[in-house]
Length: 69
Image 1: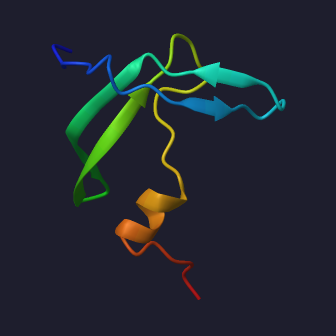
Image 2: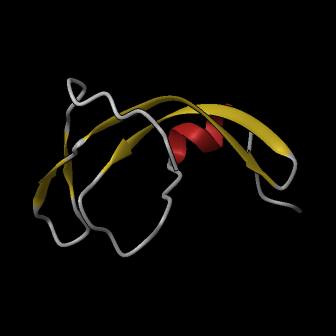
Image 3: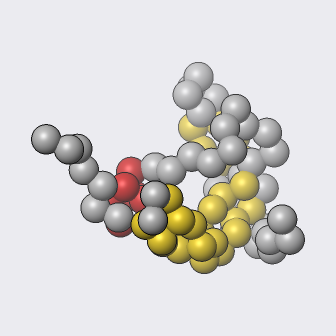
């Protein structure tokens, strides 16, 4: 995709099976559009994952995502 990965920005995450995994780096200020909502995120990159993109609670709070009543 031609995106630049900042390999100096590394973090460790806890996986769903209680393991740890080191990220490869961070794509900073990645433009992301979901259902017409455009945001900019810092996307951390892993070697292999069972998903293409995982949006967490911080992103949900940023876009003020809520349940429809």
